[in-house]
Structures are given as structure tokens and as C-alpha cells.
Image 1: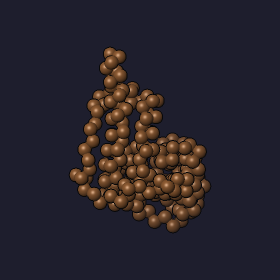
Image 2: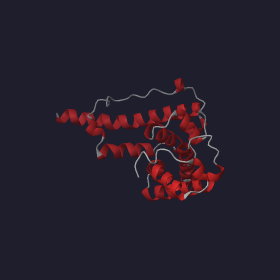
Image 3: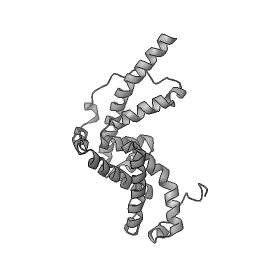
Image 4: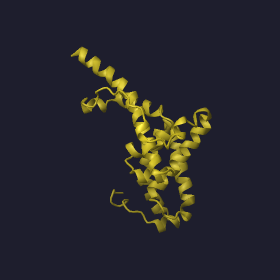
Length: 204
């Protein structure tokens, strides 16, 4: 099946339970949904479970889907909600973070972090296994709500509006959480890349 063939899905056929169209939907969105679940949970087995549960719930709910958001945004919302429920079940003590109570803060009130100059590292360094591992670890240190915004907006490339629709929050809250997530990640990664650059300079 080519990308062009799955580019447009027939919503009417989906709502009627057409097996071929449902298969096309699963083919089109499986990779994206799995990436989101894996980013949220950092566990391949759990991500597979979320992937299956997302499509099971979506297929059951399709007859009542009103199309107020895009199909992809709706699927993202199911996947994130399922991931958050699993996080709350597995780690109830960390299910809620102070971050969730500060969405109304003006962005100017955020502290300024000292960021090391790691913007000019060669691309191959950013793509290394070690660097990817460091980034993944840093993302996992974010609260679940900050993590979901960062993954949808900065990794999956959803717009602010789409991210807000997927998470059921306002666009202002998306912007606030996204800034908070980016600052926390930059603070975390600046330490790593600062040490990296120091080593490179010493070896050079």
C-alpha cells in the first residue's frame, strides 16, 4: 500500500466498520501512535499495549465520532489518555506534578537558565546513540503533562491548536507547558553538552 493510497481515509466507511478502511487507518497511524506511547512510557511492551488499546477504543467509538477535530488528533488524544492512565496506575505517587498547577503563569515569569553553547555541535553527534539516550532520559524526567505536550508539539510536529485539541487543554496552556518543558530539557541537556564540549576541547 503506497503512501498516496492511505493519504485520504473515508470517514463514512470507517464509521460503518469497513474492514479495508479500518486496516488503512491502522496502517497509517500505527507508527505515530506507537512513538507517542513509547515517548510517554519509555517501555516498548507498554507502548505496544497502548497502541492496541488506542485502536480498539477508536474502532468502538468511531460510530459516534463527530469530526470536530481531525482523525489523527482524536487518535493522539486517546493514546495520550491511555498512557496517562497507565502512568497513574503504575506510579500513583508521581501522577500529579506542581507543573499542572501553574499553567496560568505568564511566560515572562519563568526563570532564565544558564545554557551552555552546544548549538553548534556536528549533526552526527546529535544523532549518536549516546545523545539519543540522554535526550530520552531527559524527556522521561519531565512530568507526564509536560512530556505529552513536548512529544506532540516538538517530536510529532503537531500545531499548537492540534496539540491543544489532542490534550483537551487551551492553546495558552499548551504554550506555557511547552516553554516549561523546553526550559527543563535545555537545563538538563546543557550540563551534558557542557561536559561533552569540555572533553572535546581537552582532547583537541
